Image (cartoon, rainbow, N blue to C red):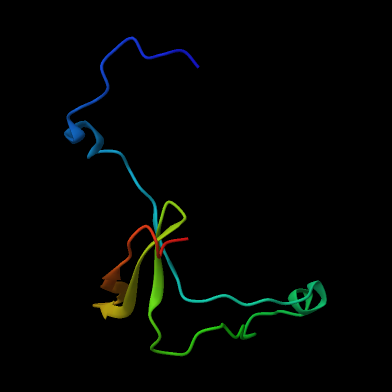
Length: 90
């Protein structure tokens, strides 16, 4: 890698319009291939969390916060309960 010939960016404002991907993880489950092949419409996959437990909010695949699922009109949303620091994120 060669040293930069220009000054580093000192104005963080130029970064504000970079798009980020936000996803919400309700929970996880493990299964075998045979179980996966038996899934059909109407099958239920049990997750590792209880109803009402906080959900994980990920930004670009990294854990960022914990939240609560809410309903807004006919859509789902997430109410932020806790923004995690670097030591708590994955």
